[in-house]
Amino acid sequence: MKKNLLALFTLTTFIFAGSVSPLLSLRFADISNSTAALPTPTTTIGLKMDLGDGVASGFDVNTRTVNGVDQSDFRIFIQRSFGTVGIGRHYNGDPQFTVGGTYSTLSNMSVNFDYVINNLTDEDGAANTNDPFDNELRLSLSVSF
Image (cartoon, rainbow, N blue to C red; front, side, top):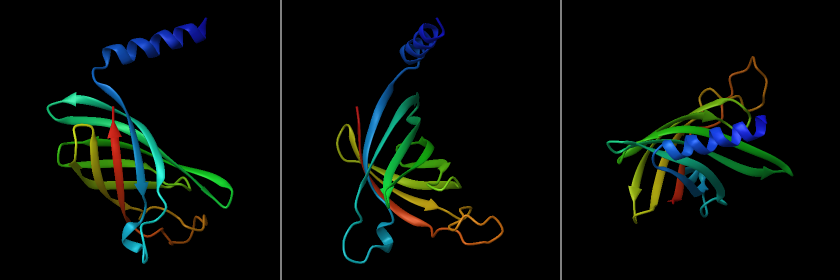
């Protein structure tokens, strides 16, 4: 019974929410620190909801495998026609912030440049040291449906 109620609630939420669309991206992390070529892209999946007046909000999840261990980061963002602001969780669980610009190339495709602020991260996991990950510039090619 609870499963049926949850499914009904989820369905009605999407029906009355307005314009909710899935978002798929190829994300190139830390392009400014790369010396030879673009880093290996990772895939990102999320949902974006149109809030009206050129404003959209949503979330995306990025998963990668490092040394056989799956890691993922998560971001909630607010987007206007000219840029994006986001707050989320870094791969190791620490907070990260993003500020970026968006360039629409086609009706459903865009190129996003995000400056990722990692000042609150802790690279080695020791809580009493101050060794954050470097801030990075990230490039994404996104398709929304």
